[in-house]
Image (cartoon, rainbow, N blue to C red; front, side, top):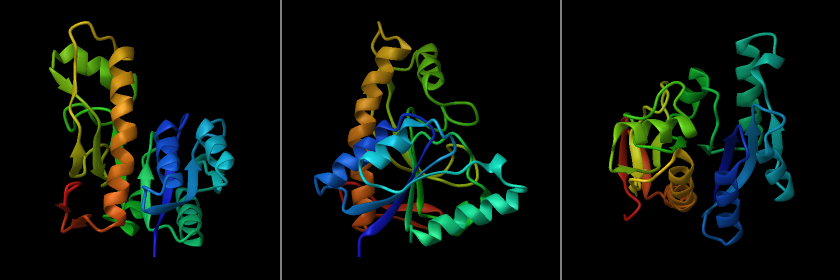
Amino acid sequence: MKSRVGVFCSGSGTNLQALLDAEARGQLRAEIALVVSNRPSAFALERARQAGKEAVCLKAKGFESEEAYVEALLGLLERHRITLICLAGYLKKLPASVVHAYAGRIINIHPGPIPEFGGPGMYGHRVHEAVIASKRRFSGPTVHFVDEEYDHGPTIAHVPVEVRPDDTPDSLAARVLKAEHDLYPRVVAAMAQGKIRWEGGRVVGSLDA
């Protein structure tokens, strides 16, 4: 049985598109069954609809309590029989009870090395600006398991991307994003095939397994 993937996005959803394209080519080894956003204007929702996927906007502010929001989110995931959650530019922290319910089955892609360039407020161009300011020679996307802290869970895979002397945040971002679009579908496919898994709080296996 194929893994059923729920992809969470807050913005345009280019990593979602990379996953959708990989699924269409038969390379994902999993089915994208649900796309969730916390922003009704997120273009990721339109990408999902264009691909014939269920697309849902779920905002915590629309519920009377955090408990009601969590119940609705868990119910949504259960109805779609989601077995793997992929965060792809999702800027809202998942509630701890959701993280616990899907422990070892939630992954995130971050546009820089972690933990050095992760944590609250470190997303998008802020990451690339910080990398350039640090004078590091390499940046690159990191895929990791999600725990209760921002950008903190164990790393699954990282692809180094050279930081060039004349780089701007925009130029570095473009090359990192290209690497993201290659890396994320490969990780999802590896997890769907059981080549990578979470055991006892650590990563077992690898992309090359």
